[in-house]
Length: 303
Image (cartoon, rainbow, N blue to C red):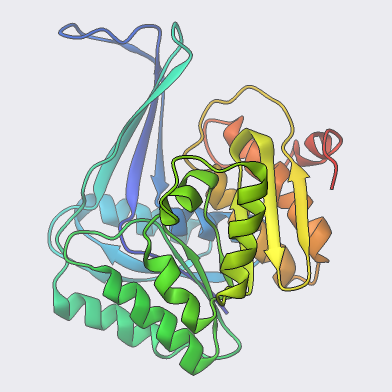
């Protein structure tokens, strides 16, 4: 079974407005409300690929209930730990006159040690037949030690661990040989105390992550495309061109599609190309891709 874990899920409110001026009422021209959080997005993506999965994480209040019900309506089983407080609401505003996106991301509820231990008890039951995605930021009360414990459990119990977080804990987790990590170029630079990375440095540090223990490194380069590093291969796929509407879920689509297709037996080169096209499709959409334009986008790509 595939599991996704979103420790700090959210409801994302996407709005568009012609202008965004201070101290006045800015009326929206478009709005959309979506259950979100990196692991939640991956659950939806996997289900669109006809891959059953179970969503884990923390859920609080009416907003948490909304997310769980949205997953269950799509046929995705949920095993969230229920907490006090309210799962967060984030706001993404697209200002048409500026062609700019503003992002307001809230903190989320406070998680206590008992609730963390309950989540760990779920994860400790996974075995070599399973895949676990852990994606996104930690909520208040959850430290990077929890991520390291999950990495340790993956190594001990032999389940495939897929990690997507901006924290430097990724570097510490490499000793447990995660199945896949997914930094973007900015995160990779920050991990190695650089402001930016040249193309040569991107390749150098991507390979360094593999040498340090990662089985695969999926390095997102935004509008440039994606690099994939394994012990035996370095692959690059360019991204197709289009009008960017929402970048919030593109990386989740990339990662979910890539790992999902590998799980279905698709060869790694084809899985990477499909994943980059799907991630771009999400960036060109107000929400997650529905995959209808992926084949057309692939015509712009070279692998």
